[in-house]
Length: 363
Figure 1 (cartoon, rainbow, N blue to C red):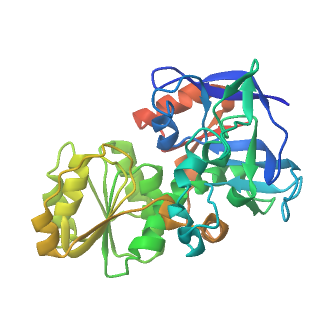
Figure 2 (figure 1 turned 90 degrees about the vertical axis):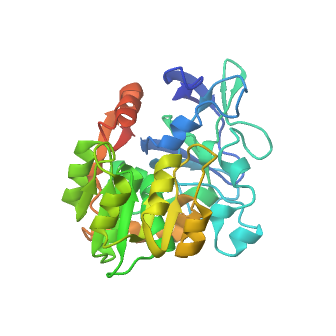
């Protein structure tokens, strides 16, 4: 079938909305008419993967929509269902069997290879393959093919435009707090970067009863929003000594922290600003090489660990987040800025500049 998709031809090229051909759903696949999809930093980071490989790719991995058709072997999901699309997992490796699907041994192949596991792609243009199947969806398109293992059915009364970012950005931030750090009411939590991931983490910490919440963020509007959403203090890294300011706001050092930036300097600051026994979780993708003070980590009994998708299983965690949202305890509505799909270029620009927190494309 012919659809319209936003093609990326590299980091330096703008997204281009063009007609492409999409396969009908095969075994285990689900045809989804896209209603909304969030734009995530990961989409921009992967806009030229695999490195050096020629040809366009269709990205998008925070999809939400309505099921149009299902392929053979699909059970429990039917045409007309409203669904959220998250990441894929194999379901059979040691990590998946242990309930840790974010660390599936084939995570990269399933989510960021630009193809199905068999090397095929569901998209083509003028008879030539277009890299797709990004996070099992490639939802920067009017329709996409998802799979049973990354599709979550939700109530039809819910606003899919708001829920789309739950599938990655909000899940990552909230999951890092609720599933990994698990701070208590006497804890101090610092988030480095008050974007979509960081503010979702802040909201989760606030709902979790954390008493001291600090946001470190260079954009003034985002600092103001962090205060509005429950931060007890904010730090401007462009004007303040970050480590000294964090220590001041947390009575000598934070007990828990989250880095969403992936910037080596910020990671070092976050580690240094931890109090004795403090824990830092890193979720931001950035420079692969970071210099840290191992003596400080050992001497302070500090912990640094990575985290993918908030260590969350979407089948159970997305309904949990949706319940919090429906109860007014996870108020993410004002984080979302809506853009018509053809305005994807403007949405990306607003995201990169920090003008909006979470751009969502609406179809």
